[in-house]
Image (tube, rainbow, N blue to C red; front, side):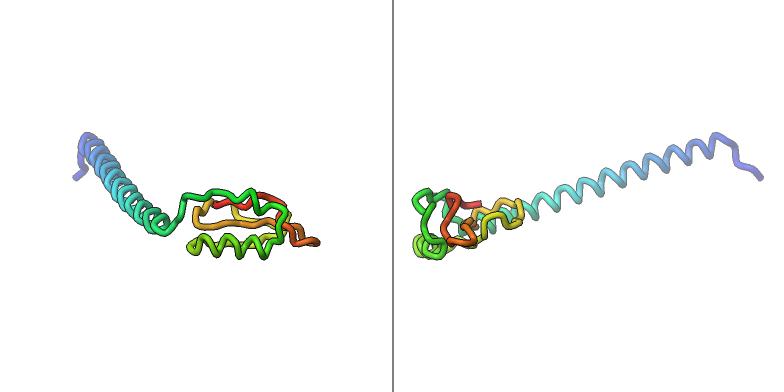
Amino acid sequence: MRLPDSFWKKAATWSLVALALLLCVLGAIQTTSSRSIFSYINKAEMSHVEPAVQDWPQLKGMDATEAKHFIQQHHKTLNVVLVPQGSAVTKDFRPDRVRIYYANDTKVVTDVPQTG
C-alpha cells in the first residue's frame, strides 16, 4: 500500500519545523551558557586589577630593570614584563599586565609603559 503524497509533504514540513525548533533551543542554550561563563571570567579577572594608574611616562628613558622594579614596588598585583623593542607580542588586552619595551643594546625604556 502506498501512502498519499499529501502525507509525505506534511511529514517533511513537520520534520523541518522540529529541526528548526531544535536548532533554536540549542542556540539559546549555547548563547546563554557562554555569556554567563564569560561574564564570570571577566569579573574574576578584573577583581584584582588596580585601574588608577594606566601609564608611567616618567619611566621612559630609564633603565628597563629599574622601571620594572618601580612598577612592581608600587603595584604588586600587576604582571610586569620586559620586552625587547621589535619583539612579537600578542595583541590581547590585559588590564593586569604592563609591557616595558626597551632597546636591546642600551636596556633603556623606549616607550611609555602602560597597562594592557
